[in-house]
Every structure is written in structure tokens, then in C-alpha cells.
Image 1 (tube, chains in turn brown, purple):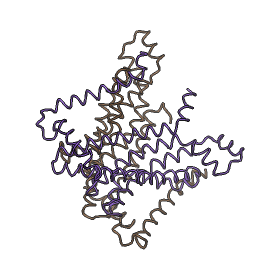
Image 2 (cartoon, chains in turn purple, yellow):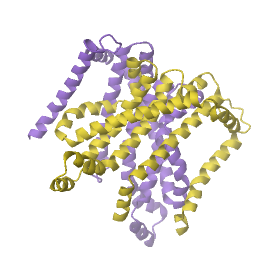
Image 3 (cartoon, chains in turn orange, red):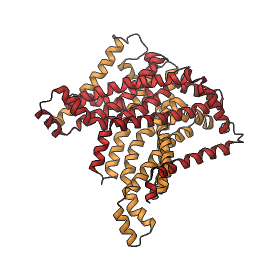
Image 4 (cartoon, chains in turn brown, purple):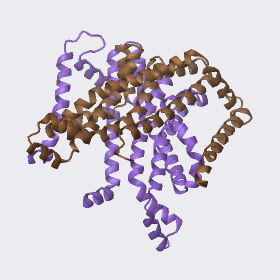
Length: 252
Length: 259
């Protein structure tokens, strides 16, 4: 009982201490006369922003880019991953190419996408797809290959076709792998959507952050960073929650 | 089927698709009039002109130096803090919510904050890279330390190991496979933040070069920058894999024996 009861105060104490250190540093400490805002003024600005519709529009635009990109990436990656996973030849042939694109961060191609799409939502969505699709396809292919060979052989003996094998053996085997991929990509999608705004000028929180910094609104810069942290925390919690609900047979 | 197990066949299987893609890009773009997709042959000529080696010392060397400096500082801090927090769950309970919040901020979004602290120059870049690189390593180190098999610790106690020996002979080696996976994520994030800090900072670095070229419609230069950044991103991952495999060879051998 005591451990459970202690847990919340422990977190609360450290949060308050962190805020207090921030406040002291910016009020009387080494950052007193810098452009770094105090904790209280940042939180006050944050509170104000919550009542401005533009803030919510920006949040929605960012989430939208992340979400659309995420869904498109899934729609491409899962069928491609299944096809690749079904044949050893296809798997080995595509492995190097997919691995190559998997490790290339989307920020690298922003200078080209900005020329092709301009600083738009489409660009942000495209970057999210690019960031996720290769990793998700590889993950799906691994899952498909992980299906129990005895089960597949048995199905073959009973004359079940390829389609049924995929549906009843391969896909269920791949689902936990896909779920892990989804959990990792959900956070990644948000990050890329923010980067698309901050570096590529796509609308949303990223661009707001860039504009606030460029115009010297440092309090707003900090407030947006806090919003991004809360949003990130919320999404990672949400994904863990959904995963427990939807892929309940792999308890981890 | 046994044919697919041979190393040479695997290698050939891995590279036919990339070769085909590059060949397709080369012929498709050969007489391209689309201003944004110039012929690959022209990109290649410009690439050789820019990066071998005329602009290399001005842009690539500072980028790589910032990357490695920031990465080393961040990773050192990450392993140290992670070890302290992982070894004592009571202390870590106090820090966890703050760490949880800080790591939920997209790493690139912290660059404007560091610009406030340090301005646009090298210090800002290295600091942003270091902080971004710190978190994945910190978390994996914490996790690795927590997952230490209690039997191992008890065995160490039976042999009367000093706390120092316990740390370096038992806890660190035992946690190292998990720590290495954090180190890899840290490196990937450090690379992204390096480029972002150059784009948002000013003047020099591969990221800055490429974006300035793109903004001034120097399409060929922009393409050479994109290709170079892509190749660098891939290369650091390959090098990391080699180093990791070399330093974890005892662990990989152990797993092979077990399976």
C-alpha cells in the first residue's frame, strides 16, 4: 500500500522542484537577464494560449499530418510487408534497400520535398509516410516469416490455399510485430510532423515554434515546447493503452 | 533452398534491387526537363565537384565534429545518470516524471530553446545534440541496470566483490546489450539534430548548405546535399553496427550457443 501511495507524491515533488529550480535560475540566478523566460511567465502564457483558437488549430494540423501519414504508411506497409514476407527470395532481395531507407531520417529529404510540395500539409504528410513506411514493412515481413512452420505445413496438408494460410496463420503471427511497429511509429509520426513544420515550414506547431523563435517571443517558444511535451506524453500513453486493449494476447 | 544460405547469393540478392533502382533513376532522368528532378548524371558530376573535396572541409568536417562531440557528451551523461538511477529505484522514482516529460519533447523542437541560450553558433549545436542524444541512452541504461539478474548480484556478493568491481564486472557487462540499443537510437537522433541545428542555425554545415541551395533554387547543389546526407546517415549506422557487433561478440556467441 505504502509504495503505491508514495508514488504520486514522489513525482509531484520532483516536478515542483524542477519548476522551482527553473524559476530561481531565471529570476535571480545565472539566467536572470537572459531571454530565457521564467517558469511562471511560461505557464501564464501557456494558460492564455489554451483560450486562443489558433493554438488548437495548430495542434490539430500537426496531429492531422501525423495521423494521415501514419494511416497511409500502414495501408502501404502491411500489404507490401506480407508479400515480401511470403517469399524468401523477395525478403532477401528487398532487405538491403528497405534497411537503407529505414535509417535515412526524413529531415534529409526536406530540401527536395519543399521544392516539390512547397511548405504545405501534403509535404508534412509525405515526410511522415517516408519516415514510417519502410520500418513498418520490414516489421510486418518479419512477423509473417515468424508464423509457425508446422501450422503452415498442416494447413497445406489439409489443402488450404495460400489466401487462407495468410489469413489464419501468417497475419495473426504478424500482428504482435505490427503492434510493436505501430507503437514505435506513433511517437515517430508526431516528431516528424513537428520537424516538417519547424524545418520545412509546414503549418502547425512546428512552424509556430519557428516563428516564435524568429520574432523573439521566447515565452511563447517555451510554452509551445511544453505543449509538445504534454502532447508526446499523451500519445505514448494512449498507444500503450490501445495496445493493451487491442493486442491483448501478447501481454508485455 | 540451400542455395539461399550461401553468402555470395545473399549478397547478390541484396544488391540487385538497389542497382536496378539507380539504373532506372539514371535513364528515367537522363532527358528530364522537370526543374526539380535534374538528370542523375548531372547530380553526380556536381556531387564530385562539391564534395570531392572542395567544400568538404567547410561543411562536412564541422558537421561531423559537432555530431561526435555532442554525441559523446550526451552518451557519457546518459550512461552515468542511467547507471545511478537504475541502481537505486528509490531515487529514480523522484526523477522519473521529469525525465518522462523531457523525453516526450521532440528532440528537434529543443533547438529553438538552445538558440535562446547560446545563439546560433557551435555551442548551441553541440548542446542540442548532446541533450537529444542523452535520453535514449539514459533510459536504456536504466532499464539494463534494473533488469540485472538478482542471482548474479548475489553471486558477486558471495565472492565479496567491491562495489567498484560489482559495477564494472557484473552490472555494466550484464546491461551492455540493452545499453547498446540505446546508444544506437541516440546516434540516429544526434544525426537528425545535427542537421536541424544547422538548418535553424546559420551559415555552415551540410544541412545549412543544402537548405540554402534549395531556397535559392540551386537544385543540383540541393540534390548533392541530400544524397550526401543520406549516405552519411546510412554510413554512421553501418559503422555503429560493426562496432556494436565487435564489442558484444561475447554476447552474440552466447546467444548462438543457447539457441
